[in-house]
Structures are given as C-alpha cells and as structure tokens.
View 1 (cartoon, chains in turn cyan, red):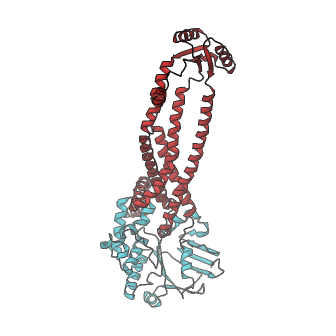
View 2 (cartoon, chains in turn orange, blue; view 1 turned 30 degrees about the vertical axis):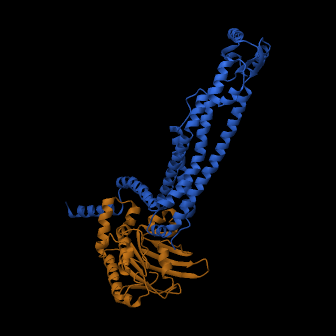
View 3 (cartoon, chains in turn orange, brown; view 1 turned 90 degrees about the horizontal axis):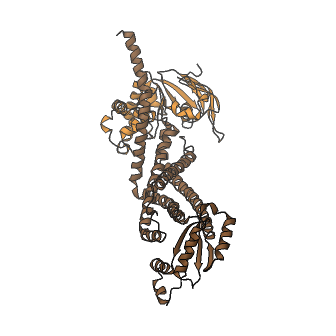
Length: 222
Length: 329
C-alpha cells in the first residue's frame, strides 16, 4: 500500500527532513511512526499525501508512483486517503454534519447517499446525536472524532493520522486508537504519527522509528 | 442466486458506493451548481451592508456609460428626424409680401431639382417661435415681426451631389425676392462629427469604468478568498479540485455583477424619470415622439449581461491569481 525507496526530503532551508528512508506497509496493516519532534514524522506523512514531494527517491502509494501524479490529479489522488490532523482542521462556520459531509460533497455524491453515509460515520465515532452542533461547542476529544468521521466517510483505503491524540487525555486517546484498530481490521491501511510512546507500546503494532530524518527501526526495505 | 455471483454483486455495489455513477454525477453536478449559486447568495446576504456598498460602486460605474448611451441614442433619434439630409432655407427680403412668397414657392415646386417645398410665413414663424423658445416676453416688446418669410427646400434625391447643390444654391440666390439662400448642410455634418466624437468618448469612458468594475469585483473576491483561507486549505486537503474551490467565488462575482446592474438600472430609470419633462419638451420641439424616456429592452439586456460578465471576469481574475498561492502545508 505504501512503499518508500530511498526517499529523501531536503527543504529549501537546506535542512534534511528525511534521509534515505525505505519501508513498506501492506494493505490492512496498522503502523506507528515515532521519534522525537523534528525527526521527520510529519514530513513522511506529507510525502504520502502529496503535500510535499521527495527531493530524491521514490514513493509509491496504492500502486501509484507519486512522481507521476501531476498537480491537476492531486485532488483525485487525495480522495483515496483519509487524513486526520492534530488540530482537527474542522470548519467552524458549519455543523458537524456538514463538516463530515464535505468529502462526499466534493466527490459529487447524491444528497440521499450523503445523509446516509455521514450518519453511518458519525455513528461509528459515537457522535450521531451531535450532528447539528457546530464544532466549537464540542470538546477536544469530540472534535477529533468529528475529524476521524470526516476522514473515513468516503471509505478511503488509506488512513493517515498526524498526532491524533496530541491534546487528549490517556483514556480518550485509547478510545481513538481503538477506532483506528477497527478500521485496520476491515482492511484499511492505517499510519499514525505519534510520540505517545506508552500508548503505542500498549497497541502492540509495528513501529517505524525516525531519528534525525533516518529510519532507525521498523524492518526497513523489505 | 449463487454465492459466487452474490459476492460479485456485493463487490460491484461496493464499487458503486465509492465512485458515483456517471448519471448521478451529471445529475448532481447541476444540483451542486444550483446549490453553490444559492449558497454564495446566502453568504453575501449575511453581510448585506458590505455587499450593498460594493454593488453600489459597481452600479454607479455601470450607470454612467449606460446613461450616456441612452442620451446618445436620443440624440441619434433626434438627428434622424432632421436627417432629410440636406435642406436649403430661402430667407426672403423684408419687403416681399405673402402672396409674392407663395408664388415663388409655387414656381420652385415645378423645378425638377427640387423635391419638397415648405413655406413658412413670417406670422407662422413668429407663432412657433413664441410657443417653443420661451422668448414670449422679448418678442412682445418688439413693435413689428422681425422675422422674414422662409421657404424650406428639400432637393429631390437625384440632385444631392456637392456640385449640383452649389449650382442650385447659386440659382436660388439670384431669384427675385430672395435675400439669402442658405445650405443647411454644414451644421448636420458638424452635428454628426460631434456625435461621433461623443460616441467614442462614451466608449472610452465605458471601457475605463468596465475596468474599474473588474478591479472592484477582483479586489472584493480577493478579500473573500483571504477570509476563507482555512476553508480552502481544508478542502484542498481532502481532495477538492480547483474548480470546486473556484465555483462559490465565481458565483459571488456573478451576484455582484447582477446586483450592480440592478442598481444601475434603478439609477438610470430614476434619472430618466427626473428628465422626463424636458425630454418630452425637446421631443415636441423637434416634432418627434420617438424619444426614449426609459431604458429599452436591448440596452437593458446589454447592461445586465455586461454587468454579470464583468462580475464573473473580475472574480475569475482574482481566483486565478490567489487560489494557487493557498496550498496546505
């Protein structure tokens, strides 16, 4: 599902965010990317979502060599990825329902189907009763779950999460990890960047550990 | 149904769920456009005062050239009335009596070079003068009628070349009782030149004001884009195409153009209403009843289509310039 071969990213400032990173994540796998802050976790996720392009090396996602994805095609490529952000990236001028519906609206689904699938996604994260609220009235954990519902509502085969539990207490964090676990169980590939080592060790999943932009552990280059 | 085909069907169903079919896509395409159209209107109406200010600026900018266009069209209609092309006025000598003048007119009618002859006696001329020009008091102060008899001649259409006209003029000048024979051609030429001049001026003014509308809309949309930066980033992150992001802004430009045109229409209608009385007086002076006292259908259409196109073009420019700068990081 995800295949990095010798991918490097050097920013315009001259700083090497990633250096010769190679690894593979199979479909339906769930893996954590860990490492100190600034180790390159976010950059790695950005390369997968085509928010950045590698300076060297190759990234293949879902069978697509990302070097061949043109700027115009990026939106369609991103529709096959669900992205979850630490700061949620919700739109505060519309309801929870409308936030979650956005990926379906963008893809042009008919109205009735949108309602059905948004409710299903909100049900999955336990927020069905709050569909008419605006995100600002929700707690941090609830906002994060709205973000998850939005990331999965269009059933993407790949889920990326950047510090999804960054601002949450351990219990809420655990709940959110369980939701990710459930998606992995039904065949969704899940990649989570996090520095919450205790939580990660409890999950007993594969870990890709970054240090100064290099992969130091996590069976690289299969 | 066999389990295998059932499974295949389920797979198909799954596929259909992920990717909407072409038919539903085109159907929902139009629904989405309609929704975006209404949505962008709703967004505008959330801040009605700000919207009205911008629309008013556009409206005034559109009203100016459109109003001038109406005035020009009126002037054209008037000159069309006068347009019997060339005419010659024979001012008779003060001593000529009315019967002598009538005789002269009768003689002129028989000449082949002459098409139409109109005799205006000095009494008629005085009456008309008093009625129309508001000189009543000044005229009353005079003891006797200062106006001469006048014979207005329209040459027959076959004899309007410059040469024959000059010849005819010389002949008329030499006739008995004729004081002055005046070819009333110059001033029509001059009028046309002046109108051409004004017309070109109106076009230049219209172009500059169109540019102003473009910039006003462009700037307004640019601010709208900046205000919704976060939203644009999120939509790009979850796979919104440029076209999808562009759409509400284009429709916002559409609404600005439409409201601007509407305001311009109202401004012009009110202005013409205020000018109605003098326009009618002018029309009577020129024995005409074809003057415009409101925007005609063609001009209105031009105003609205022009306004909407300018709104769309302005937002297109702004969106094209600024959407690319906003990329998720």
